[in-house]
Image 1 (cartoon, rainbow, N blue to C red):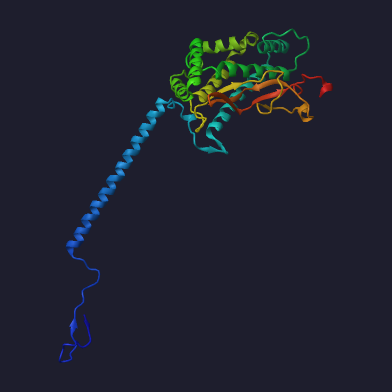
Image 2 (cartoon, rainbow, N blue to C red):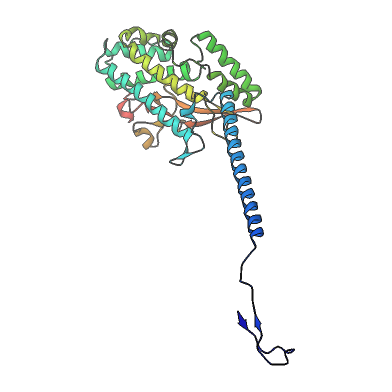
Length: 341
């Protein structure tokens, strides 16, 4: 309630009482209308939220089915791609870790063989050289443990490279695996993308591990002379081949890194003994005195395979080294005359 001043039409000059409405007051009908509209809007927002959640579930199911079709369903432990670890993609990180485990198996086997040799070291040396070079003349000199150990590592590196990684082991039949490898090479020459999908799909049905027959065939083909002198060491060799198969399956059964190289595939390589050291393809695991003097040196033994990524560039095959082979030079193995070092 308020009093205003004299009204111009009031002849008696009395104050007139004026009633002003309360501020911010709406009628009950307007309140109920606004409340109903708010409830309707809330229900629509909730309905849209539920629809979005359902769409996300459907997209996740579609992605899972696509992964199955592309051969990724059983490769989850290798498929954490897209994240970063120490500045490298997880793909490279997985390769590094898995290769490190395989290398430990090989080193342990070679060290144990030297520590408890079933035959004289000279026989093991000659057998290793025979497997590496195809033939080995009798060497009357005494075999040093370091030389024999690294020759063993070289033989196993070649066996892992050619017998496991570079052959798509999908079945327990060697002939079938060779045939599948040739099919993949043929498809890759025509269309790398189709080859990539085919390779991953094929590995969804791959065997879980090398069968005893398959392991025996790999050994007899790539290291027959050593197998004959190390007959009682088959369990350790089988363990290495199983680890190598897991490494190979990780490489071939999963995607390569994203981008232009996504359709590439991996191949292993082992530098030949006596080959000139190539800095882009080899990594020395022991000091090379000759290289430090600016002199040329050669590969004494390759102790672990390197990896290249094979891709197509303008219709031509291209190989990029993603992991250098680990080698020991000749001077570090004592294979060069002392007056040259």
